[in-house]
Amino acid sequence: MRRMIVAFSALFMMAITAHAAELSGTLKQIAESGQIRIGYVPDAPPMSFVDREGQPVGYSITLCRSVAAAARLAAGLEEIEVVYVPLVSMEERLGAVEDGKVDIECGATTVTLSRRERVDFTLMTFITGGAVLSRKSKPINSISDLDGKTVAVIEGTTTHASIRDFMELNEMKSTLRIIETHDEGMKLLNEKKVDGYATDRAMLIGQVHLTGKTGDYVITRDVFSFEPYAFMTRRGDTEFRLVADRALANLYRGARIRRIYHNWFGRYGESLSPIVSAIYEFQAVTE
Image 1 (cartoon, rainbow, N blue to C red):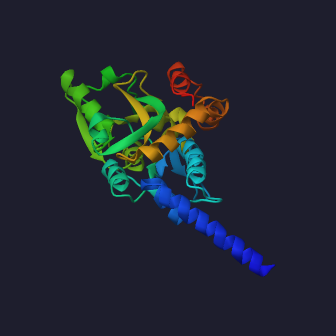
Image 2 (cartoon, helix red, strand yellow; image 1 turned 90 degrees about the vertical axis):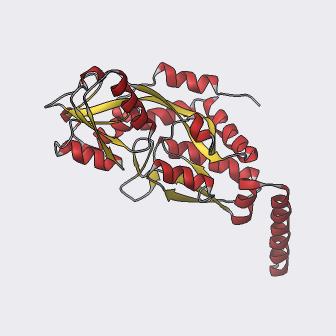
């Protein structure tokens, strides 16, 4: 009996090796290592963050788990180990995908043409806009009220470029306080060292609810940019990107994607917006 088990195991490994030889790029590496490495931002709720048990969770993480399951099948594996790699700055996230440190980045990354010179993007996963968070005791109700204000913003993000251009276009005498993380932005705001903290509206909703004091803050009613999110993959690796796109399209065709949305945004009182619903419908690509 033991010989039969050993023989079966050997045949299974030979089959995996043969299948891996037919693959290329990321899928080949996944087949050979039995791992998929997912990059994520650890302080960007509700998209991606670390829960009380120290586990990566969030809207983007949930979608990426479906990608991991699809990659397991495509690589011909019975099981797959998901390795989460925390990444913070935009440059660190781009570099990790370029250099092969991660197979896919599943955080809150806006698709831009300049970034597509370095990486590829999957189907869109979300869309939001740049907004400003302020304290209720000194509110910034609209982006038109930013003149003369000091606003914190993370360096190298699309938010950074968009709010800088918005202020210049409108000849606002405002000051940008350049920071590195969401936590730093919230800290400066709470210590009253800045008047506002600018980032994507989806991020601000998560940051406010982490404080447990939602009544203490105000988010601008309007936005100064539109931010379409997608997952980053290695540039030119069309085989793996197709696997990721197929996994996302399968989600978008069913009711589960709306349950995922409500699980991560409904808890914050955010109903499914028409534009996000349209993303799901328009990207539910058929086979």
